[in-house]
Image 1 (cartoon, helix red, strand yellow):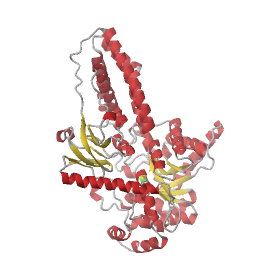
Image 2: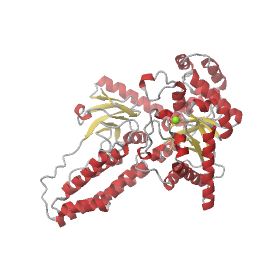
Image 3: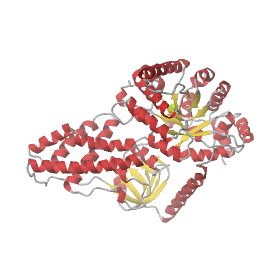
Image 4: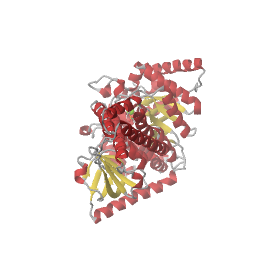
Length: 569
Ligand code: PEP
Ligand code: MG
């Protein structure tokens, strides 16, 4: 058994296809003179650009704009006059086309990979991918075409390169295993978007597997079983079929309304981080977007997205959602979400430091750019709402609203349309916000409870620290009381209240949340149908009894144990 990071859930079974670096040795290539070498380089570059543009087009349609832009970035790099000039200079000085390309690319790869910045490392990997494919073209070497991989292929690679994304289709690729990458890496996001089970970051992968071996990948647990015996294979095949069956069964909930067993309606929304996820959300029956994590737009690049870029993204999401509500959270940077080019100072306690709304209220240029983009997008479909993260103080909401007002005035002066009545909501994810929920409810148009952070801050237990994971529990009476209190405060003030933390999709907590009076559940795209099914099973009488009994316990363990017995159906 090999272990890695479970990056995309599900069981995948198939035959391993190892994608290892090819031998692209060009030392035997003879120099044919500057003119001929230059012509060879140009022919290969033209072919590369043509193929890559076609790939980018396919990826844009199937996966998303961002993945396609990575490929177009390779084309732009190859066509960059400075890069071309450097290669031509080497050819003029006696290098063959392969050597010129390789040397210049290696220079950039070294430059970028030596920088302590995830984005730059990614850029180095992109150039590496371009270098390999250009050398393949120059040397007439076979390139790996995953579109030709037979059904049931388990792709095993050091990392997923941008050009591999083209061939990744769940019709023929049953799972992905890589040697590098974690839960939030590009490969992980891609695998989840494509719904292909994936285990990433398996150390010394290629020393432990071979081409053609049968492998079972459990993308939920992060396990890879190589050459399983018949009995194990049978068990996992059964499990896999059961997962598929469950998925199919859930499909009947796709076009249903979200109602409990008494016929009370709720809003069931999805959490997304990209335009392509909005498409998946709609296809999975989400009734809106309850949380668009915009920090993803700021990651994997070297500068902040412009107002126009952001406007286009927000508009694309609201168009895809066809008039349904889209709640867009303003930049939630800092804490565990680091964006290198923003040059935020290193802090002793980043989770308690200068982050999210605190950062935005000081870096008003970054914040106003986003607010203007949001306002402009609100004019297109009129269903865009703004949500502020990590609020602890009423003054933060007022200050954000004042900046929003400034942006409105600027847009008005420029004759640019926006929704004058755009809603501004508050994420309830700090104990301070929970304790002043009544005061915040007077300032906010809606609440959304972020239980991931609310649990961390209420329990004073880092959400990423395995050592104290027992303390990090949403079942703790302190967290549950806090949730109940927030919902009641919202009700008293007459504003809608949702939940976009992971707890909204927890079957143990759903009856409690229903009893508390939550209006909207916002869950990950893959949990939408399951959540609708869970909600549909409860009557008000049942949930009220669960609330009474569960809230009488003193510890998280007691609550959880009780809910395990009474909540699962
Ligand atoms: C939360 O804190 O519950 C939340 C939804 O936001 P994030 O996980 O992005 O911090
Ligand atoms: Mg949060």
